Image (tube, rainbow, N blue to C red):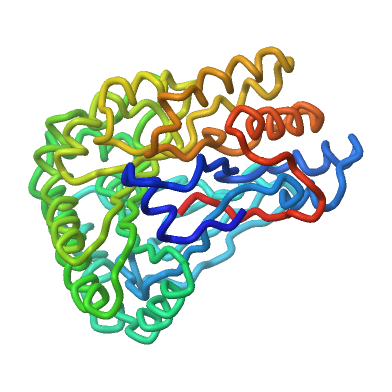
Amino acid sequence: MQWTRESYLDLMTFGQAPRPMFVELFGPLIGLEEQWRRQGASQAEIDMVAFDWDYVPVARCGAHTGPRGGRPAELIEETAEYRIERDYLGRTTKLIKGVATIALPLDFPVKTMDDWRALKPLFAFHEDRVDLDAARAARAAQQRGELVVAGIGGAYDTLRELMGEELACVAPYEQPELVHDVLDTLADTARRVLEPISRAVTIDQLSVHEDMAGKSGPLWGPRQITEFAAPYFRGVWDLLAERGTRIFEMDSDGNMNAILEPLMDAGLTAMHPMEPAAGVDVVQLRQQYGRRLAMRGGIDKHVLRQDKAAIRRELEYKLQPLMRQGGMVFGLDHRIPNGTPLENYRYYVDTGREILGLEPRTPDRQGWRRMAF
């Protein structure tokens, strides 16, 4: 079912939402479609619309806060198995075909302050980052019920893209001036872009992508969040919150529990996808933080490869009454994994709808949009 922005905002701010929201955040992994076809899936099931997922339509606001420009992409080598390119930052990247959708960098351009200064113009403010025509179109879409979203670059995530994981982890200790300069640049650009945009249209949600954690926890701790990320996040959030923005959501895989408190102190109000395999339990987080943190996802995708009894146990726990009091969008914690039987997925959808009190699926009600925004 298509939700309106008003209903979605009420849900994610613990207001009077009309009912629980049940979604598919990301869709299937590469290869699952072929497996499901062999198991008799209809085209509507392959396209995900047969499951009548909830979604809210999203409009982009015309704010371009990420890197712009750089060198033209250059193909280095391509085979049936992989593709190697040089990207806009000058990195060598490798995409493994048939397995991945995102190419992985094999090298990184920034090791020193001088390296960063050479790339800094790609991240600095320029007037062409502000698209007021798009902002006006977003305002019209908002009046039709679409959610207006603005995005900013992650703090750790940007450093990782520039430096790689290892240097992004040690740079706060060994090169704090470099880290501050990168994040000060991001903050300056974001605020100068979003100031005129937020006068032209009320931004409903501010989104930031980090992906800075694994099973053992985040790659930055509370000290790094407080010292480096928080001033950046808080400066942008305060500007938008004063102009009516109601959600500040972070996308990060892995176990972020150790830094949720400083992130919320920096303005964060919501997070997804909440991965159980990394030790994240949305029920425990709700008990701990109450209405301070809204969440999306949280249902263990790996359970779908077990039996139906395990699927029901997972759903009865995650969809319990405590979690149906607002601030929760129920869905899998990331892409549907390969090896998920189609029959199990159908059972998951129908059982979840049953527990949440939603109407059973019927062929005349179809819909789905990716809810990772």
